[in-house]
Amino acid sequence: MDVGFIGLGAMGSAMARNLIKAGHTVRVWNRSPGPAEELAREGAVAVNRAADAAHGDVLVSMLADDAALRAVLFAGGVLEAASPSLVHVGCSSISVALGRELARAHGERGVSYISAPVFGRPDVAAQAKLNIVAAGAADAIARAQPVLDAMGQKTWVIGAEPYMANLVKIGGNLMIASAIEAMSETAALGAAHDIDPGKMLEIYTSSLFACRAYQSYAPGIAERRFEPAGFKLKLGLKDVRLALEAGDAASVPLPFGSALRDAMLTAIAFGDGEKDWSALAEVARKRAGL
Ligand code: NAP
Image (tube, rainbow, N blue to C red; front, side):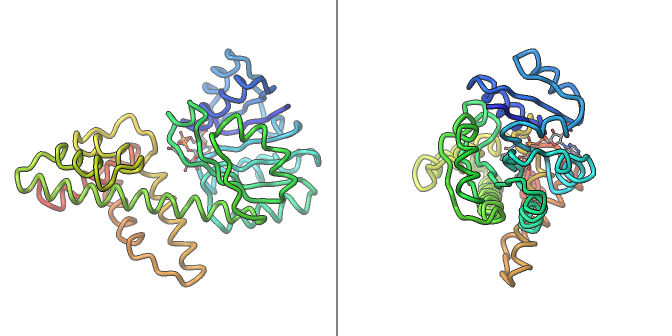
């Protein structure tokens, strides 16, 4: 297939690379040119304008947040340039409100749009093992399926309205952030009582909490190792805010979300916004005077 790909950050680069490996023709664009040049050496075609990536069968976007998507799709003229036969697959973690707006804006131009946010960090993306949550018109999802298959291990179709997938993604990240905070507080509690946090978390992640969300973050929390960032704390705060916003819109209080927002803001105030979001552990230690 002829696939355009915009947004070649930690996730997008790995995903686009798998599309090249699967034999698709991949036209790539990124705001800063370095990542597109690198993929061009591996067989992609680097284009100068984002709009030039919107003429094929499928366009995948993996930009940072709502503001980035707005800047590229609307102000950057991608939507205007999109051919009617295109399916736009939005993989970024964005707000429910923007998910709804994108569905409307694409519909008005006769272009298909599905939301397909992903679970899995850059290492999982590199192995094409992402769990992809997709929502949108069934025929558009079917047309994009070969592209989704090249990037993920499973596509979970959640509904016919794109925003639904965005909400499922936001909810999942609220749960991961809660798991990180739970381990961070418990590790600080252990350290304050002269117990090795590494051994402590190993017990939990080998028994009661033997699942990926806990296991993948426990060693970094115990060793206080937060770089290189798999998922930047500032992007984690973005997702917690999106959960709070979706909660506000439907009168759903999220007390854990409110506490996480403050803890993440504290981490950013301490200068940890570019570190992995498990740097939340340092906030728990500082609160404990450690
Ligand atoms: P990242 O490494 O920070 O990459 C962000 C991308 O967005 C880069 O291509 C960046 O371009 C681009 N961008 C940012 N602001 C822009 C703007 N105003 N205009 C144009 N382009 C802009 O982030 P990431 O970790 O790949 O995450 C991308 C998305 O995937 C986010 O929505 C994130 O929440 C989601 N996600 C991340 C993970 C993870 O573990 N990392 C997992 C699942 C989902 P430049 O290179 O020019 O800065």
